[in-house]
Length: 466
Image 1 (tube, one colour):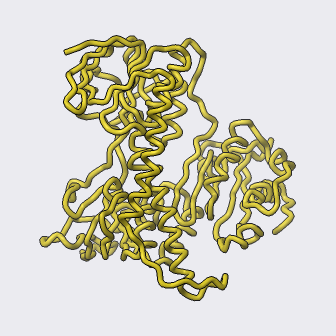
Image 2 (tube, rainbow, N blue to C red):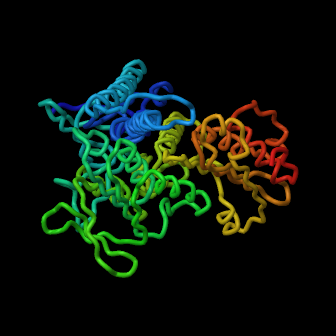
Image 3 (cartoon, rainbow, N blue to C red):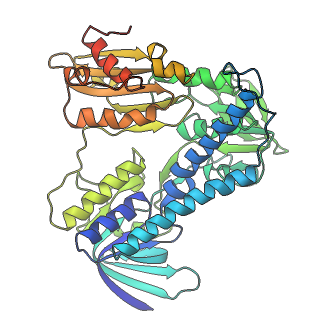
């Protein structure tokens, strides 16, 4: 068994791990990154990027179906069909380009990348079983950064296997099923369920709570739920899954009246959440302080063991790639001697549903729970010219601000392409903008962004276009 020594050893090459490695190397810190799978982690390979690619493909196919009918735009095409294998190859090409780019950046910055599976010996030593028949390797380090990501949560009464799949398999179908049952009405279930429905699959969705996207406030989720029903997704809300039937071709569901029904399914997508990846790589040997399943950290991502750091999904909610990236960059700078703390004013969260949902900062209810006296106002996209030209007038932009000084504490939006507004929302909160700042900023016409300005104007009592 050969040995290596490095200053910073990172376990996990996902968004948090590879960003930390690049930044550390830029700062002159000898850095080694260990990754058993593909660089980019869940986000680039089986999460954020491939799901958005499939969402785009499904949207384009749904558009051609509309054009094959009586489109109000006057566009007519022949009835379309989809070659799902070719679609998946296109998606995989995007993934390969991005993961290849990550590898190139790591090489350019002289990060040592070890392809293999790490097992922690102690806070300074890791053993790596190298991939593809490579010899075992022992790496000693001064700083150990844990960034292993997360894994899908399985249901005890319906484990993954056979017809029961996770989001990973759902993103690379060899063929399309006739009937798909989605268990879980959160953002993963909704995004992928919408993809399959737009590709022509019969989709049923089961959620134990009374509405979809239960982590978001009801006003935001109403347009999403209405859209699902309009496209023909069958919603079973307030229902609990009991498991598969005896023949394995239907999901047994208990409804709100306590009656059991069977939902026929060729495939069952279980999307009830993700949990930190804590097993199988020796984490328990460190005996770190935990917060449930997550590793407990402070505002510098330090764990309870000196010079052992943790970032990303391993540290619990919110499990967001951009959070992991920001944490990874910060840890690298702290190790290099800079003064940093992870104290963002707001953390954007986006659901790429149809329509999209974006939340940054506090909602009206959350601000009230925090003891803040706030005002809020929304501007509907039905009054926005750009939305009309895009044939997508559902949804709105909402702003939440303190009553006394008009400091903005939150933004929410639901509608087409509102994910692109998240940057403006984040900037305004991080920079301490007031309603007057946003209302007084000239916004380009015609754009969806005008709804941001109009929401601020409305909160001040003088909206111009409603």
